[in-house]
Length: 329
Ligand SMILES: Nc1ncnc2c1ncn2[C@@H]1O[C@H](COP(=O)(O)OP(=O)(O)O)[C@@H](O)[C@H]1O
Ligand SMILES: [Mg+2]
Image (cartoon, helix red, strand yellow):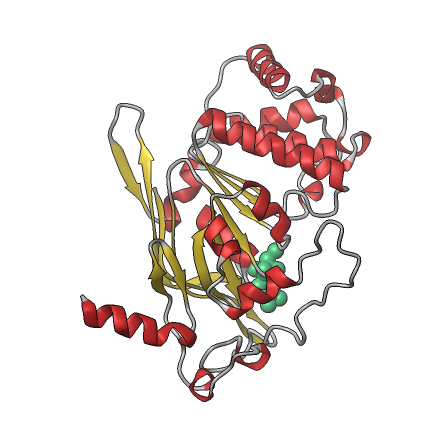
């Protein structure tokens, strides 16, 4: 429904070119919750911006294509490219950006934010009619309707985030992109937001792409999980398979560093930090931190290949297996 093919997206800065997303291919499937995980600075937010077609300086897409299959409402579909995506914002695809507390305009009420967002791109009925529809929708989502009269600063962080989810989903988009939707919220509030997002996804039967550095979030709600490292997808597959049998040492290390219930021991993070994306190393970008690194890992970049059905990884540890399978076929 939404496909990226060999996308590279760079930020042009005074210090040089930041290769935030490098040769990434990805399909958002119908009716799925797709997670994107990885440490901070790995390119998750940038990838989400590209999926939304929200590409403005200093960001540019330097290679690859985006292809969206947008339903026309009469059973047919039209194909849009990256530059055409803004035409279908809110209606086909919506986006809840990172640190979205600051997205709401502080000087206008929530009702006006809905009204502005909806009418900016789409014709609607009268203001009274829109207000009724928005109020009905808030009720459906079990949000208090009087938030419509409030200004953003009068709401708690959790309530603001719920309002954004309502705003992003009001027009029933086929795809919702959410960037760190629960970061900076306490655990109880987080759970409420995740429940709201998954409920909306289930009821609308649409697709939800969730970016989070928190693997716990992905474990709870995603169907498929992509792990990003230094601008690349290094592993992608069904979430339960990724957790049960991670194929990339980076994924394994991320899972190992997760805190566990009842476990009092201090969990170790992964030693070291991701490489600078101004001048990424050749070969596998994780090589410098990998506990299973081999000599050629520092020279030859491993391609992302299907190791098990629908489960892909980019790691030389699986080279032999792939060669073996190819030999049989
Ligand atoms: N507006 C920007 N200008 C320059 N570099 C940026 C900008 N936004 C992000 N970057 C850089 O791009 C890389 C990827 O960032 P980002 O996509 O935000 O990662 P993540 O969401 O995984 O934390 C990082 O090196 C970050 O510093
Ligand atoms: Mg981010």
